[in-house]
Image (cartoon, rainbow, N blue to C red; front, side, top):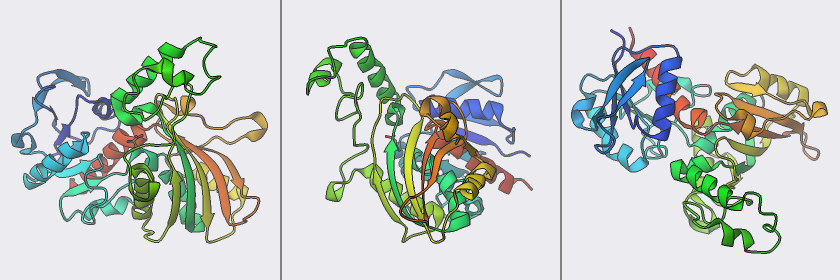
Length: 349
Ligand code: 2RA
């Protein structure tokens, strides 16, 4: 029989994208059951064209499920993934709960698909949305040139901080829209936007060099996560990574400016070809025509968009490039769905 799937967190923002993906990608599942917190349970959502009632999250949800995808906050995943695994489901978790766990492979299907068979705890994880905005392109370049060092600056969208993040940006934009008196004196935007929501500074008419929580040495947690996740996915535990994370007034789709140093000399045309030929990457790099990726063009799409590919002027082994990807699709639901499809294929005789 085709594998049965449980979707945990079906009513959230990432869960909604997951249901859309399940309804539009190749159908590899038998039964699909939906679960969410008791507060959201009881609703009927459409998946594969059929109304499906959302059950309250409980151990029985996983009975008979072969695969369980989790689109929930890390604390919920930490509590419930072991329950699902104990009942026989292979868990695919999109949260941060297990990313650093040495017993849990961190999977990006375009980069390290074979690791899905190595699941000692019955749990697989995907990286965070910022790593996922760049890792497919970087994995392809690494396979050709051998990655040695990364210096990256992120331009992260408000929805990376959840629905509250996107709502806060919209509310702030409404307050400042059309006011030409703003943006000339220190603090005038801060005074105008009102509630900062999940951000430490105004996001409208501004950029904020901080995402996540404080970490040692002045880093923010997202910067350390990017380092850890790139190392783990690429299997490069010594990779040098310096990240600066910045929140920008974009609703959805993260961007990353990358300086990547390789073991070998790079060639601009060949690097573009490598990216253009890589599944999951679209090359959009026509500088003469001022064509390059932007988040407002990448939003709602599946691939990583790559452009501004240049050989560094001062290092023939280094490339500079600009990448964009939808943080709710490849950055969350799509990567989880792709991993689950690999598991389903592995479970299907
Ligand atoms: C964000 N939490 O804040 C996401 C990144 N993983 O954009």
